[in-house]
Amino acid sequence: LTVEAEESAKEKIKSILAGQVAEFNKPITEEDQLPISTEPFHTVDYFASQGIKIDLTKIPQDKLTVQLRKFTDWLKYMRKVSPSPTDLGTDPAQETKVQTIAQHSNEAKEVLTEAMAEVLEKQGQPEKAIQIYIKLSFLYPEKSAYFAAKIQQLKGI
Image (tube, rainbow, N blue to C red; front, top):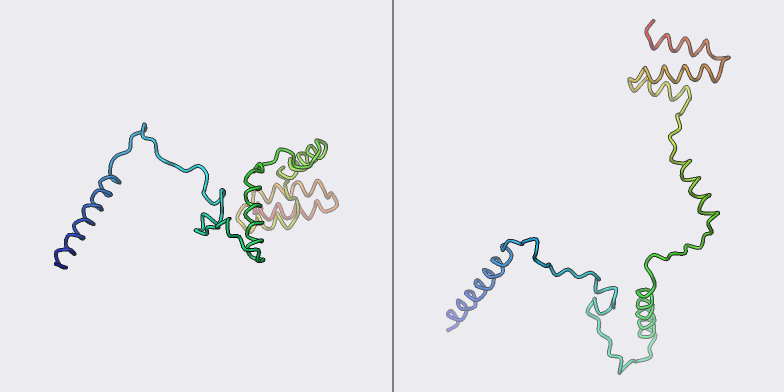
């Protein structure tokens, strides 16, 4: 009897699994509606999502339960509060100041130093290094002879 019951159970499991596989492999058309939960359960009640159920009729007044109720009430309040507040506590003048600072921080500024020219030279970019040396010779005319020598060295003359 146990062998027959065991084989019967195996057959039931096989038929259930075969049905699930057939349902899984069934093609989906564009018209099919897929059941998608738009709101995770933990935003409604965190403790319920964790499997913790509270019987509100028999609430003991110990410290843990009081804290638990406070936390649950806080979560429910946070759910009602807009996730993206419209007023961030800044005035329009501050906003424009921040925008101008952000625009200036994103501007590409060329580094004009002898060290940068040497780095470009070591990276195998002699043309860019020569361009930096030319700009440096205009910025520092007293060192133009030095930069001219560096340019000649890079050109291989």
